[in-house]
Length: 93
Image (cartoon, rainbow, N blue to C red; front, side, top):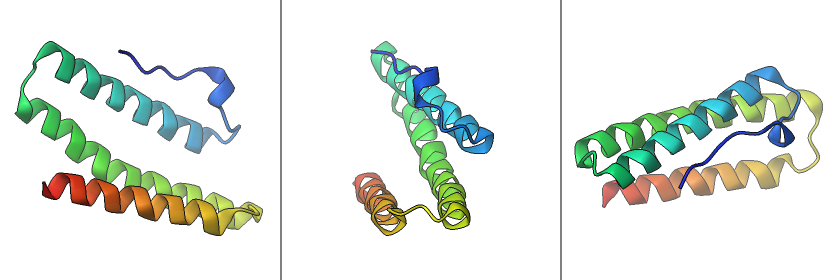
């Protein structure tokens, strides 16, 4: 199973789009590592990277939402918080 970035997902904000592409690449690496049996350590390294990277990415998105007055900012920030909490619980085991 592969996850690939495609142009229909672009926001038009290069910083956000670049981060989204990086997230897609890393998630694809994780899926491929798990599928190939690369091992728990390899998968955990990618998960750790993703855990930190999404926090950075969410902060970037939230700056843009603030700058451009995104009308669903509060709802979107809540989704970010829920995803971060889900990740923390998952990593805690």
